[in-house]
Image: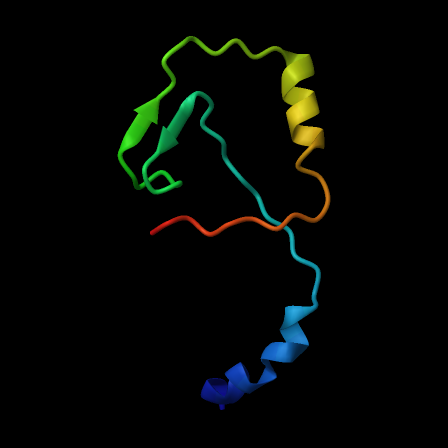
Length: 70
């Protein structure tokens, strides 16, 4: 039965995972996600391809992230 599938949790825990993200630059929120009240950057953000490439490279690999507050 499908409801017993939760008993197989350990089988899934160690599987590789892949995430796709969308990023809004120059904005944050009180909840750490897009559903919160926006807090806009106080100055203009200038991003060039080199800065963006460096930031994206920094996201490759494994990371531990905090969950959003809400």
